[in-house]
Amino acid sequence: MADFTNARLKMVDNQLRTSGVMDHRILTAMGTVRREAFLPADREALAYADVSHALGGGRYLGAPAPFAKLLQLAEIAATDRVLDVGAGTGYSTAVLALLGASVTGLEMDAALAGKATVNLEAANVANAEIAVGSFDGAGLPRDHFDVIVVEGAVAAEPTPLFHLLREGGRLVALIANGGPAVAHIFVKSGGEVAGRSEFNTSLPPLAEVPRVEAFVF
Image (tube, rainbow, N blue to C red; front, side, top):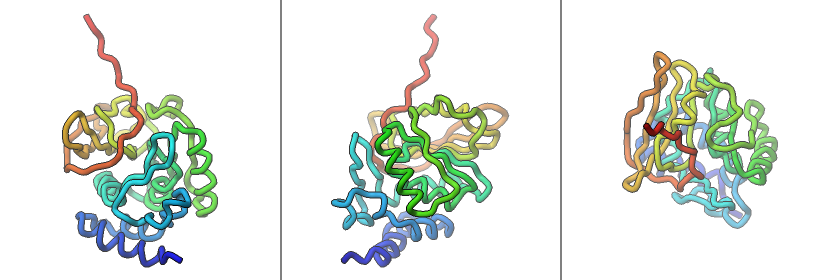
């Protein structure tokens, strides 16, 4: 039988710390959440390997270190409302629930969303919910979230999500537009959102957030 507790500790020490993740709250959260419980049965044994896992429907659970580095970039406070875009089977939502005050996991695949809800209930996560919807956040309240985490690489700035940020809110995403994937952070200040690039890393692609069409004159 696999020793998942020991594997979790090794993941924290050998993957997260060595990748520059030093935020003790993130290390504790990812050392607590049972990653194997959010994977298909045939992937459980590899739950803590430095790999991404297919969840079905073209969706993935990304490798631990890139995910942790994005969370560290977001600087999530215990009072923050968090939107988890691309929640999959709920692992990322469960980790975020240990960092913020409340989490909404957004998942466009209804079957995965159902699994995520069941998984979060089984893990006794009380401050998170799963919403089924497109990854542009249509139908979610404006100016509502302090942090938005995009769980996968996208081809362009996720501008359709910017209106969901509160003043001072942060959005972190990995952008891969035909070249190396680069982690970006976008911050809302004075009603405007500005972004900057931070580091290269790798996550599987997320089903695209629709782009905002520019006016043509």
